[in-house]
Length: 498
Image (cartoon, rainbow, N blue to C red; front, side, top):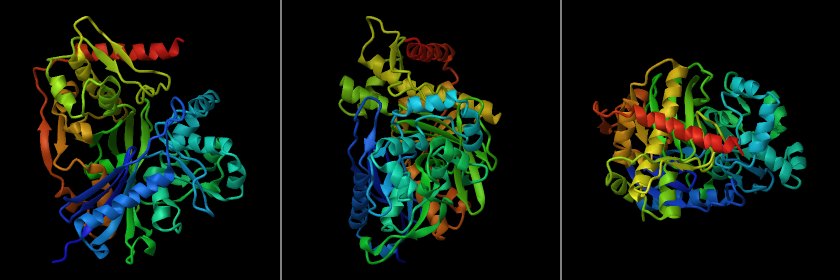
């Protein structure tokens, strides 16, 4: 029997990857390539959109070559991507008019504050489920149209296209034939009405963006088109798209209302499946579309932590107290606690549920006895505390108690962090056998569209548990949580009292 595969393209913030999944949902092969990060000014983060495409194409080619398979063994391609990152390109030439402005970029923070002062936040949240913040795409598009010479005129003539990274990849994979996105990515732009499932003219007017720039919005699981023959003699169907965090929610098979996952990546992203009706948050979370399969739409509550695993990179690259990221577990384990040290890693502001763009990183509770191990442990614990804050807000918004937390992403391999997470949440934390859940979600969506897998029930049988971190009933962290709140209040005070 001939082996068949689904190819997932996982275009992330720091690297592009291609992962080949077999019928059992197992990884057959992986290729990965990092690309350049640009920081032109403080708070600005950019990528070269052409390098995003070339790196993604390179790993696509590499994984096929490594696996020694023919193109006809690949039944479909699924795409998952860093969300909100904004690319604007010329429809005639296919060339970007400016670098991709990355989701982490804060250059439009003042512009967003001005919109809030105009009282537009309630209108925008009601329609999009999102808060006005420079994190999302609309203010980034507005910035490009204002600051790139000639861009506004070209846009008004209908000659510019906007896309999140998924759109850019599909555009290039199809040699410019398809300009599309899916509902999960559209719902991250501040321009898409999550109730009517349409681009919203009032929102376009607020952000001064011509509708002609926008991609066609599709479901998360359907055949959108095929790869162009320039990529190989046999075209491959492109059949699944979801923003990285929604893809991870699907890859974790959190397909029932009330199920929650946290991805511990550069940032951390908690998503809770809230079913087929959107709930607008009263606790500074965002409501987003999780996915659309057939005619059924699933919604999610989401909380974003800007600095998750990146705090470990900071320990490695800036402080130099570890040589590689994996060393942090051993160093943090060498002390029983943080000795009263708390770190708030607000290097680019605080995300949910605080949403304070001006907050900055803070270390508190240092004494003469504080050492690198205490700082390492406090850094790890900061990831868990931030997760706790979001999870409690989710419980309030959804009026339900979380029964378990499914985890993935690089830092989910850190057992010290996962046990601490379970203990402060008083909720079991479950790590799956395959933690590449983002790519897996994209593969599942594409596979469903082409009949590679029959239905969600079949997918459920593929999800396997690696380890459950059970709550230690003797762990008492109430005072730690009070101290953490004091620490975040201090970081916000620093920002607000200049």
